[in-house]
Length: 326
Ligand code: PAF
Image (cartoon, rainbow, N blue to C red; front, side, top):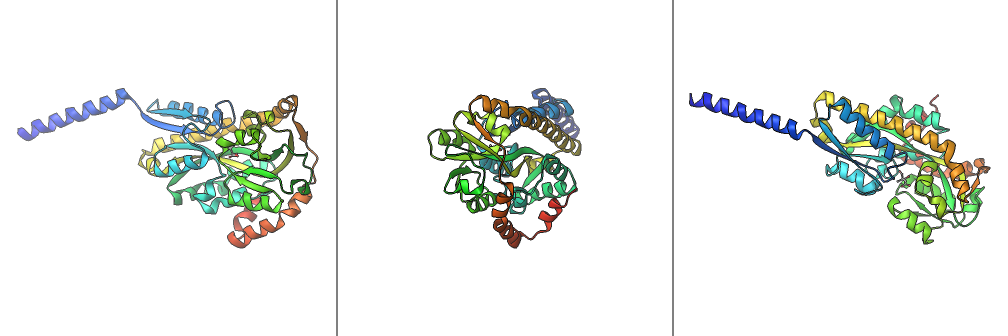
């Protein structure tokens, strides 16, 4: 009897706990970006949050943070790895510091255009690359876009690599970028993005390089005179989640996280397309000089050696698969 009573009591207790957690309702998922809310990263996490809550009948409460409020990209990836942050949406800039085998994605002049980049990332090549995050204790949920990167500066209009000689440009903390930019004659100055506007304003660096969406949504046209459409590297974005947390979820919730990330990626890409179509006008209106005609072949030739160094270190299998994708 005693045991039965205990059994009933513990069932009641379990019920209370279940009802209690259902009433409190939700598991909190924090997700952050380094970009402002009104931009191609902000819309990605907003769409992710809405879709995840919808798919799971609000069993998750997704809390969104913008403009580096919970840390810049490198710190955020570290947080996701350690489990002190549940989800982040980030460019792949700092990713090689966690998963060196993903360096290939940031090789200059690898992707021809948006169709190529999105096609590869959405193909089985993209799936395989996404799975590599697991070696770092991270679940890659979905790829998205940061965009093709272009150079801005306050010294002179750039049309050929010779114009870059000795120019101090802020770069991401990405080893592939840094090696390539050195070869272009740039003095690379790696810095977390959250410090870049002030560094440009105060002349700590002469310029920086980023996609149109980033430049416009952060008002760099206010502190930079020239922008050259170098398109020198495609910069992917990715939704990342703590792997232990992901693995601890029921299968249907795991599917919901992946699906919600894909919806976030679609919103992100739509915003990138919109920015690519409209933002140059905004920047011109703000007085920025935009240089579209460049000696593209000269840039590519100048980067041949760093491309070869990359192949010597990493082999050419991933690189060739991406280059040959049709
Ligand atoms: O330049 C960077 O660090 C990244 O492109 C940014 C702006 C944080 C967006 O991912």
